[in-house]
Length: 349
Image 1 (tube, rainbow, N blue to C red):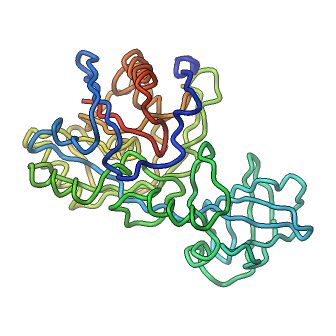
Image 2: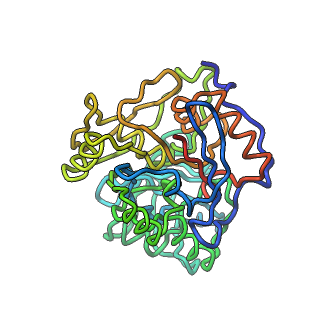
Image 3: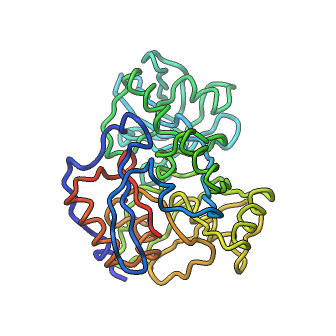
């Protein structure tokens, strides 16, 4: 399939720069896969479209404050994104502004008050903006990031190193049920849930199950190949335990719909599917769901509106059909829905 088929034009003003004041006040576009019908609603009314016995599968990963700032000894400003640690203070990061740096060059990581926190040395450049650093501190990455880190908002949301805005983003760019640190991007379909809405849905007979997929920075990488089949998707760590696997299987056995909350939950569901059941598992997944994929476990999907030519858009078109999704996106644009991470949501049933 040509990647260009996943393209569409979006007015820049529809890219949400801030979340709505109340999470569940986001708009909800309900799309029927059977006939392509669309209905405009609100996320707080999600229960109107669910049935007793349905099971919502949520991703409980927790976003780390992975964005940080640094300087060269000459005071030149750098911006980084923590990806992982390899032990002994060695980090792999994305580093903007490092073009002039050479291996062995020192730099200084800045804390949230813009003071020098610790010295680091560039060990090597890995290509594509990735670098390996050695930090001159014995503290672990979570401790260091608490001192220096900002919410890792995607590049289409304009943010600097303002502490007050970072404090607000650290709450809102996180689901209310996040509990397992490890992501450098939020599972954004879950940002619309509030604790009262979750309780309301439970009382209506909707069950909940949790998986973990630590969303990586590659989630924002566009498909650059001419054909989507040539695209190499990013690898991400996941886990689902026996208790949650049992809850999902029980819902499936009693005829309830398994509803993936986000593309991340859906990728895990499809990764661990074994026939009409799933199995507890942990590891990494590179599953690239694209048009032509046959879904095994996912009966419905809650998702945000995704970037053109992205693997996330490929997944939703695989689920609902290319023409149907592009028609829904045209409708959303006409109705002035808000797009991307802080934007509105879709329910595909």
